Length: 225
Image (cartoon, rainbow, N blue to C red; front, side):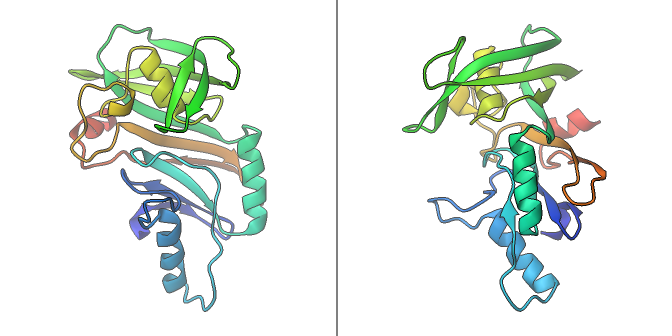
């Protein structure tokens, strides 16, 4: 756990989540990062009672990258509000097939969650029950068979990046749910929460955190070279 912690102070803790890890418990019953970090802090700091740790935002299980946890209730309430107000800037990296797409594009769609198959349905215009989803991507590297996109999120919808890129004709590598031709060996997808930028909820200093990509994936390693 220690090597996954990218940033920590008295108020918050930021982790580089691995592919397959849950950010918080779900119906699978698998141990979540939330529980793992609580246990780690309890032992490391020799805490006699319960450890307070609150999840500020989520990323999908097959995704890797940065997740913020709050260590105090004050930090949790402030950070949650900041995420809601879009005051936490999130930048993602995604690996997609080498298709002919614009070098840079702002995508605006409307997404509605299908609860039955846990998938986002994408609409090109405003539709009842669908929420506006906006992102901007830039092609920042060309590999032999893939493109590396850097994505800035303006909204935070369920499966937003996965659904919008798929609708644009470039599903994320490994993302069978949204149209990728094959899965990745580890069952994950090549979507990585790369960078977070925000004003610290207590100290008010500027925070910028960057997460290294998964080193067990040759394509990811090539992206960072």
